[in-house]
Image (tube, rainbow, N blue to C red):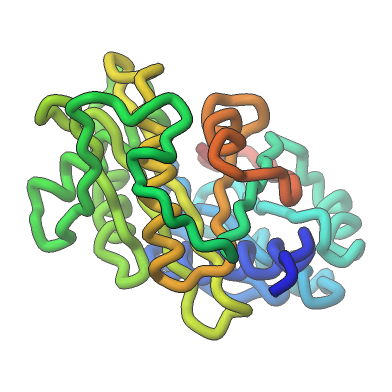
Length: 282
């Protein structure tokens, strides 16, 4: 089986992300071949994804996108891959959308059969006393521990998780295509990461690895690498053809992913439209 091209990976990943985000958000509506989602001011799910991948985007569709977010008091925010129709870029520019950040989508082909035991494949050596276990989504205490650790890298260290962030995290863990994992060192939970398994029939499926954080006291000990390797094995067992990771350019996630076979698939732009009284996107 030939490897997927970047544009094929983008179609799999962007539509997977759009569907998965919609299913855990409080509100979601289709628009321009993609999805726009909302879960309350400040939520990471307040974003539009996968627009323009299948053809031109009209002014009416973009006006509807802007109105969807403005009516809810938040900035319109959209993730745009390089393979969209040019009409999307032109329409966003006319409405004053500004570039906020870039994200690299990394991909790992899963066509090969990895026979070596998991612990032997860790490039730094599997850390002593490290265990990575799948979270039981019906175990409320285990879910809370996982979500609190998984979000620790995406909020101020001195701010506890608020209930709205916890609620969407819990919905993610309990989503039927999500498999969440918690890493422990000497019995203490120190890391977390989840994955979504693509549905069967999607060109072999794309599994996305996301929501990974390691507590500060356990960093630089190979915990993140162990979480990545564990989820790659899970993706293979689920029959996925490719695994993806979204990462800000140049951070440790990107470096660790490269150590276990991930490479650059494509970059995408995160754009938002400012407005008086609108809550900024996170």
